[in-house]
Every structure is written in structure tokens, then in C-alpha cells.
Amino acid sequence: MKTIYSEDHRLHHARLELIDGTLKPAVEMPSRADTVLARVREVGLGSVDTPTRHPRTAIERVHAPAYVAFLEQAWSLWTATGRAHDALPLNWPIRGFRGREPEAIDGKLSYYSFDAGSPITAGTWQAAISAVDVALTGVDVLNAGARSVFSLCRPPGHHAAADYYGGYCFLNNAAIAAQALRDQGAARVAILDVDYHHGNGTQSIFYERSDVYFLSIHGDPLQEFPYFLGYADELGEASGQGFNRNYPLRWGSGFDLWSAALKDACKVISDYRADALVVSLGVDTFEKDPISQFKLKSPDYLEIGRTIAALKLPTLFAMEGGYAVAEIGVNAVNVLSGFDEAAG
Image (tube, rainbow, N blue to C red; front, side, top):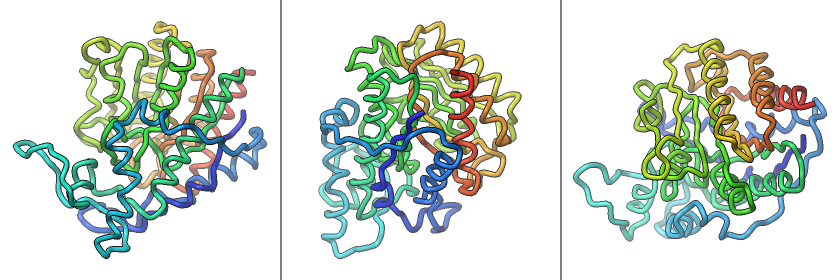
């Protein structure tokens, strides 16, 4: 399996985030991608290629142009006020407030985000668009006839919606890849999100569409971030009614419950008769992950890969979360190795 990777991910290196009511060192760090890449090479998964540049229009097929323009300008607007530290929002337009974009950068940060844990840095924009190129180059690989490809995206993307960021995500790599697959001939695309946290951004992007089926296995939003989406009764709206499926699981869930959800999700994908599959590959379901509450073990990820391979679909894996840095490479590559093994 070919891996697509860009060194530009290092340009986004947040120093602090708001956790447990205090500023702490950011857990979404460059070493996450470094560890995964090292494991890819250690096991000889396949070649590692750099991405090619893709037009901005591919991003704007998913994200609102005003939001994309904000991300591009946010750091310069922030530093123009005399601040050189990472940019975090101050407050949010919740119930009863007007949803009107302010002129001041502090207001813009709040308007376009949903949490205080996703700092914007000097290199965030370049790293984010590079991650998109990593995902879109993966689409190119599939369209050239490959059965599978690993897009080692960083920053991750599945919490980013059409016009807001959060959860360490700025541009939605998996959603942009799925849209590109549609634009380039796939009639139906499935997105399977196996990250510990619900892919709220991806769900919102495709919630009223039937041509992209979104399925997510994640921590129950009654207990877990992002809290306000990810319930089992969210089934889609308008043309998307019946084309959204959530599998919320309680804290402490092990591989027995998790794998049962995966098997059901794969049956849904098979019945949908998807032409291609995008997997939002988060491995923060691991038992030692510092910000998650599931109990999966490293060998379980091999079985995840085998199960996904049984769908026999062209499959793009887009890297999402996973914050047990010492084990993230083993766990992510186990999924890919299990897939390759079963795919033959």
C-alpha cells in the first residue's frame, strides 16, 4: 500500500491548548505523524510518496469560501494586533447571540470555531492545505487503479465542518477526498469514521445528501467530545434521510462491542453498494490513549483492517486522531497491514 506524506505537517505545531480548565501542552503534535511514518517504513508497507498540488477549488467544493479565506488570513490578522503566541478564540455566538461575522480577529476566531483546543499558529494554513493535497493525491492513486492508499494527513480533519474548525481540525481531508471521488466519477461514496471522537464536521457536510453515506463509531456524546452531535437517532435529513449512521459507545467499551458496531457498519456499506470508501483512520480507541476511554488493544487493529478489506472497495485511509504517541504507529499500521493481508 502506497503512503502519501508531506513534511509540511510540521509547520503546524501548537504549543498549548485548553484542557481541564487550564492551558496544557498540546497533544496533537508533529511526532504523531513521525511515529506513524517510521512504522510504515519499518514494516515495509510500501512506497512513501510526496503529494502533488491541487487547486483550491477542490477545498471549496466542501468548505465555504469565506471560511477558507479566514483560515488563510487568520495568522496575519492575529499578529497585526501585536500578538505572536498561538491564536485561540475568546467566546462563541451561542443561543440568543447573533451569528454575524465580526471584523476583529478575536471575534472571527470565535465565529469560525467551536472549541478552545485548536490553536492557529504561523504555519497552520500551509500545513492544512498540505494535508488536503495528501488526501487528494490519495484520490489520484485510487483513480489510477490502486486498491488502497494511505494518506498520512496532519492536521487531522474530521471535526472541521463547511465553515468552522475545532478538535484539532481545520480542513476536512476525508470529506474533501470523498467529494473529489464523487466529482471524478464515483456515483456513491461511503465514509467510515473509526476515530474515538465523532466526526461531527464530516456528518454535517453530507447530512442532507444521499451520494455520500457517513458512518461513525465513537464515544457516546452524552459522555464525550464533541458532545453535541453523534447520537444514534441522527439519520440524515432531506435527500440524506437514511444515509447517516452513528454507533455511540459508552466509556470503557472494548473490542467486542466495538467490532460488533464495525461489522454492522460494513454491512450497511455493502448494502449501499458504494463505489469507493474513505476511512477516517483514528486510533485513539486504544486502551492507553491519554484523552480517550475505549479499551482496544494493538492486535485488534489488525482485525479492523481485515474486516474493512472484506468490503472489496477502493479504499483511501485518511489519518485522523491517536494520541498515545509511542503506540500510534503500531496501531495505525496494523490496520493497514491487516487490510493488505486480507486484500491479498
